[in-house]
Image (cartoon, rainbow, N blue to C red; front, side, top):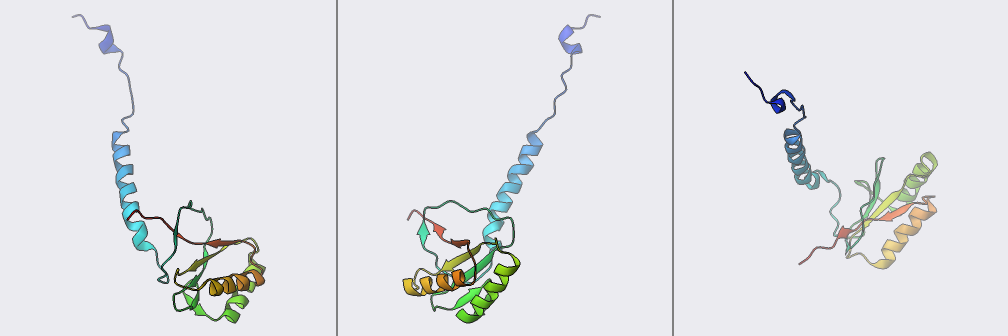
Length: 136
């Protein structure tokens, strides 16, 4: 009985095809569910070409709705209350960024007024939230 030399030298390899299949399925699931999980106040954001920001901690979001109502995360506040809450936040977490989501229908003066309140509260990192441009 003669055996070929090639048959005796078995090559052991890990088959990664099932791993790649599972990862692609998970990627599709997360891409579909991520927009659904976003909660908050409904604001029509301006559309611009920008990159995404990475955040390692819980985001603090100030929203300015079309009716000029101010929300801190999801709680409605006045300008005075907003400054007090953000001052407390600035004392506790001096480097935490605050993101401003302003409806595109709100006047520029109101947006600048809210930005001034955020700055006066001691927040030094202020980001503006926008939506990416959509081809129509």
